[in-house]
Amino acid sequence: MSEAAVELWGFLSEDVESVREEVERLLGVSFRLHESASIGPYYFAELEDPESDLILRPNVDAGFDEDTDDPDDAFVEPDFPDFSVLLYVERKSEGKPGSGRLAALGTYAQLLLVE
Picture (cartoon, rainbow, N blue to C red):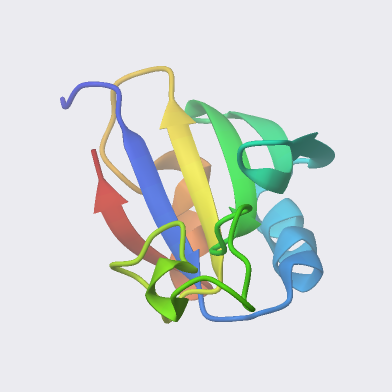
């Protein structure tokens, strides 16, 4: 078994609300909207299998100003500019990436990174 990790999933859709609804349906969770000065608006939910915290957010830096900043600085995850919506899965237990309920995301999202 691997150590507890953070999985990063990416969605090609630019519509955070439609992604939220689909992820809620696929994983059987309910996201709550939060606001953060450092990361901007994001959705949070807890998942039971595998036990994880889920953070769903746009791939846009909260401090980005399109009028003054370099467009290359717009993304939270600049290595994945094609993915407009990101899901961070902060696992609390060991397990194979994409296992348990997360396997349902494979038809709708792409596993981009495991740290």
